[in-house]
Length: 305
Image (cartoon, rainbow, N blue to C red; front, side):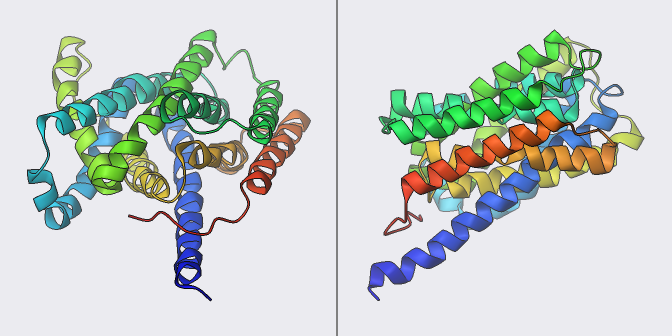
């Protein structure tokens, strides 16, 4: 066994762990937020879940990455602030609206379509190859998502919710691609935390101007804490860690796992019903994932930072 092979196996295990945890963490967000969606403004939910997620990671960043932070240039801070704004304000702001104006499972399905945007932006910006098998994998995933949306309840899944979900999906795809090079330079923890801080500071005047208030109702805190700690802080960290091992396009495929997991959570915790089209959609999504795995094949090394 070569030295490269010795290091590749742990790398694959780590990448698999990061991806699995990210799927579970991200899939739990809609289930945690949906029960309180009519009791707190979407913008306030978004602020608090990212504030909590950033707060639990900040001490680790200060202890272990203090020297690296001091070496950042103005250009670095500018780029990190821009992707933070893109993520928290545009993409996740739209996602919060989607959760409010549609079912938890529908919101999960729409945000899960972001590999379509991620792979497009990866091809456009990062010059990643768009092979025939990757197109087939994406097409199967898209067909699966379409099949899942056929079960949409128009009384709950409003046009506002659907449109917001599409904006969230596109914005998160672009955020994933733009984060890739920054992660290669600064590391996943640094990018996750420092990109969020400027956007969170910008939230204070926005919440004041729109008279949204600052403190959520007391009974909503368990849901907000769960979405902040698990779905946001730890979920974003493991997603960023996965980008150290995989290309932006390939890492985005984890979102094809999100609809079935999120629907299972919604069925178990929120009593949302699954249909035949949901099962068919899940099968298509899994077929897309298997096509991509077969296309990629085993890699000789893991690009861990």
